[in-house]
Length: 36
Image (tube, rainbow, N blue to C red; front, side):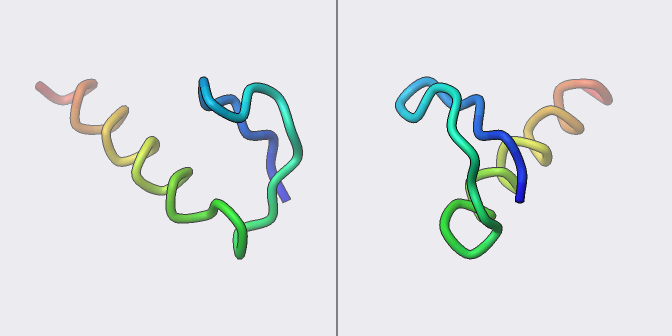
């Protein structure tokens, strides 16, 4: 589980099954931004 900080679900606990893909996309974008 992880804490979902996305704007539309602000502040709720999420399982990887429920919104894991969204978390992965966000992490990917943050990595891309850091290297750009």
